[in-house]
Image 1 (cartoon, helix red, strand yellow):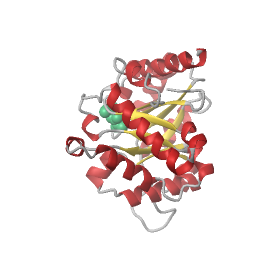
Image 2: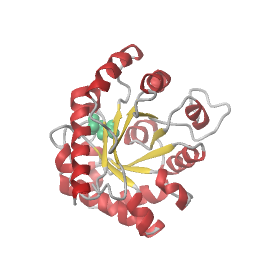
Image 3: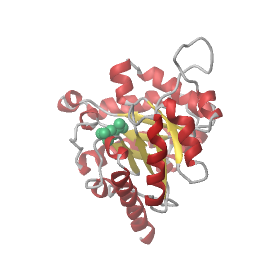
Amino acid sequence: MNTKYRRAIIGGNWKMNLLPSEIKAYVKKLLPNLPPTRDCEVIICPSFISLGQTISALRGTGVAVAAQNVSEFPSGAYTGEVSAPQLSDIGATHVIVGHSERRIYFGEKDLTVNRKVLTVLEHGMRPIVCIGESGAIRDAGAAEELVSFQLKTALHGVAPQKMRRVAIAYEPVWAIGTGKTATAQQAGDMCAMIRTSIRKIYGARIARSVSILYGGSMNGDNAPELLAQPDIDGGLIGGASLKVEDFCRIISAAIEESAKIYKE
Ligand code: PEP
């Protein structure tokens, strides 16, 4: 992590977990346990149905709220979809785009991911763009090639001045929800490759300002080692974000890591 140039980000992706009636209790438990977050942006990502309620419960606390998905279309006859203007209107500040579960279970393609990134930016929110290879692709030695392709396609048409609002989440599919975390070396190397790819497109100044997160079975135990990698600026956390204690341990690890860099 290098917080001289970019901010640490810890996002909790609740996926399709927690009932709307359970949100109040989660927030009540989270707020007194939350470490002071000046040095780390904390983002909660609930289901659409709980977004408004979570935004109200966290208003004024410094904790941001993200949607887990968005329609690529701004409005119209798209039953069951939720648009970027609708999300922005209720106060969502971030949107997860291209999560592997959307790609795998709902057939989301790279070009759709690109259109979603553009619409999120157009409506003043910040995309957290998820990219990552499957186990089979890694075994075939094609992980870097695929991740680089996903990155370039997702960012196609994103103006340089908007890149400061983009975060990338490297999430190897084989590590998501499996308890099988990438080693710090594997995750660090891929995040470094992602930064190099951004540098090739946008130049060094922008590349060093983009926060790159790791996601895939991150927890309170493995977070310090992962976050110590120079190109890992935070985490997107699934399972471990559902338990306040675990989530807060990861946030503390990010704050500790960013404090180390400040001392240098
Ligand atoms: C995720 O859903 O983005 C994720 C990283 O999940 P988990 O932490 O459960 O692997």
